[in-house]
Image (cartoon, rainbow, N blue to C red; front, side):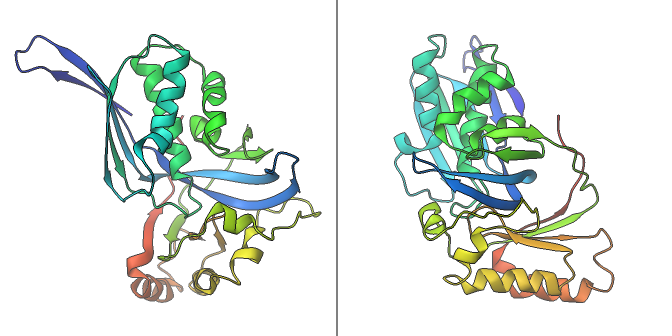
Length: 287
């Protein structure tokens, strides 16, 4: 998060701008526990933030509201964007929130199981809280964004969490991945939430962070996703999985992955060069 000062042409007016970088997440395991009466599903999963793959969100107080989107095209109107929905919802509740000018750079693909839209909404709430000095705690911000999407509360905390309920009941956990290399690969095709949940059956077994229940319903219809997972494991990943209900597959490699598996990993990245979203090493978690 950055705070910038903008000066008017006559040097008499300053505007404080918030620049935030809404990041994505992956899931370590995902168990579908049960279908609820409201149509949602209770689940268990571990959310892990990926700070290096992010959108860009700039919010500046302005005389009138405006919203400009750049980057990946999102197939919805501005008013249906979760960023704008978050703004409208909070502005209606907190009269001190004024008009803003929003510039949004979309880099995280949708239909990918990475939670990009949820992260955008959560970071918008964080920006409004800071810009207009609402004084909301993290717990209060969670309650503000919960109606916007099941994954939104996680991005308020933005550190590894064990999640229950529809993904909105969170318990921060100790998870040491420092020095672990992660490679994210997303094929051109996406997987909608509706598609992923069609045919999903509750899993009676205990939660296992090695198993994503959506793979059983998605792989038969998207064999390339299953193939990518297999290729990551063949290239030396000690763990590979589809993330969430989307089409992104990630592999985790030991820091010395340029060793015996280096040739296989390089060949994999060359084959899927246009699909590699991210390749980096985990550092420390942000506070």
